[in-house]
Amino acid sequence: MFASDTTAALAWPVAIVLCIGLFGLGSIVLIAKWGRRRWWGLALALFPTIIGGVLLLTVMITGALGFLYVVAAFPLLCGLCGLYFWRRKIESP
View 1 (tube, rainbow, N blue to C red):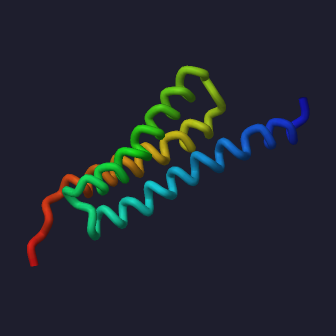
View 2: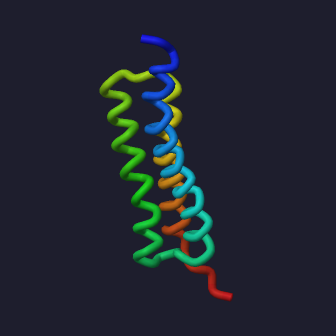
């Protein structure tokens, strides 16, 4: 097996996971600004948290390459930050 075969096999899954992480980063901004204590803010925060947790668990069980741990943890950390901002109280003006 050549290195190019491995790169092609990992490119799309890593890109999809990073897109989920970027979605999590975007949801942090939305939740911090408008989504605190609302149901859709919770949904935006839970999506990357659940997906990232499942991916990290899968990577840990299969014993994949080292950098995949970081890639799998990125959506999880973004989702946890989103949950933190969702839980904060709404500041009254």
